[in-house]
Image (cartoon, rainbow, N blue to C red):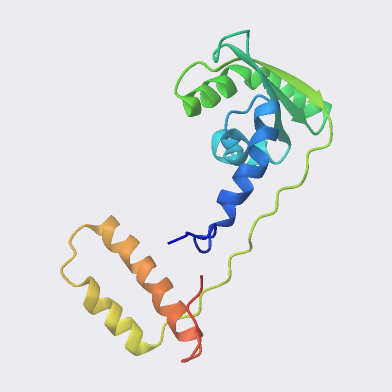
Length: 170
């Protein structure tokens, strides 16, 4: 039996990854994770005014490289110069080895990052509050109980908002 070339739906991230991988490699980024994880590496404040642009490694090495950072303004570039040791520590901590030895700052516009706006959860009704309290009965660890309470509130709030015959959110 002949197999078709289509194996069903695939995640868009997988397809996008194949498209952008050559661009990332050309810029010195092995997989582009430093770009997508940049806010987690340096924090939201710095990620809003900086962007990794290119990594250059010495010949035949994948360590001791130079990371070129796009910086929104000169004042921030001065601040980053002073923060360079801490930035290098955070970046190399992300890589797990001393991948980057030097930072180079380029004054250029930094695209604005978009952040999804969280919707406010609706309050639970009395029955839902009682159900949630019953589910949490017997949990001694306060931190775990607070986390599960928060999760439960999100679940209850989300289930009542759907119409009875609607599909669950993807």
